[in-house]
Image 1 (cartoon, helix red, strand yellow):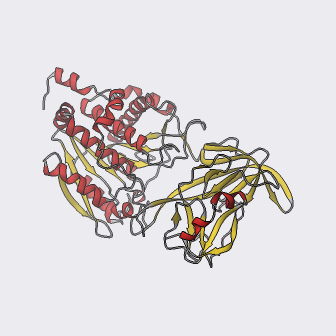
Image 2: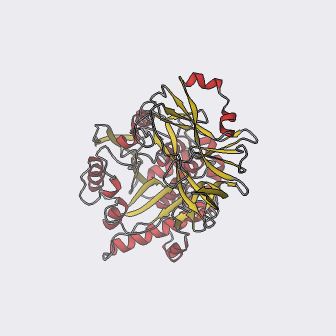
Length: 489
């Protein structure tokens, strides 16, 4: 296929800054939630298929018999494969694909240019069972991205079989990472990360070396683009060779493969800003491919991309607080992280919390910090009376309870859901809980001057300021099972 040089130049240059400014006009606004299930996604994409904008092909089914589709766009000679949510609790790339598809549907010139040059094969929500329950693994409890050697999961086999049917030039492995990584330095959280996966530990063929080099060049060029939007927050994903991962598998097969990972921040809980950057990065990397605009000379700069620093951030650090044990006291920092869970009863996402570390945390940063100098951390206590039901809680003043150090209330019937939007934890009357301020325990405590009422409460890892009535508690916990923390399975 030949295109005029004018077409080549004028249509290929889509500046990421302009895309950033125009995003609100082209994003897919019909779906704004963070959690997306495969049934919902396929119903949204059906409209694009019916309009002949995309082609759909049923590839097979998951363990629990949910359909897995491939959607193709374009008729160009450059074959690109991408897939999302092989880990079911990583939906950002899926949502970014929706934005990208909608962008092409409303931007005719970009649509025409890419359609003539690229054939894009998209397998969104490769792990529909994991997406259904917002969990990493499939219904066999297998990590699909650790199944690229023997392909024992049906989802891994589907991806392999589809790739084997075609001769792909590029592959994009699209994920989310935890929000606790730092971009090289510990003072800035990683917003987005990239990686050229290693083909194998002893790469020997010319195709392996060439495509690995091209992936490095693409990573560096894309890093430069994203860095212009979020300076100091774009990183290189750590690159230990993992022989069971699909990135390494495809790179080893001679397909130029790029890993893309969505990070995040405390102020972007549903990753809408990361979704935006993901869409722009995906658009730009396709333009690089379509335009042949890959500068392999820049691979010497690839090692200079800041590495992800593992677990460099906490959600909350309580600094320099007094803790007591066995009649002795010392000052320490308390590091807390929060994790999303899926409630099968309501279908909602909620948070749990963990005290991850206690001690000198001066080398770490947090999205939120409390300077607790002069304050004492006290374990949350349980209200002395058992309340009949949640409605009766309205007769209690939550602030007064928290000031007294009470972070739990017993109920005769705590219901079935594992969370509540009341800023106080609820316990079924027969449940016992570990209340100590201790690593591994959930983060429920109060802070106050020794012998004085509390001025801060930490409820399920979230802050409640009793001085200003500032309530940052997304949800508290409801404990209604006989295990230590009443976790819902």
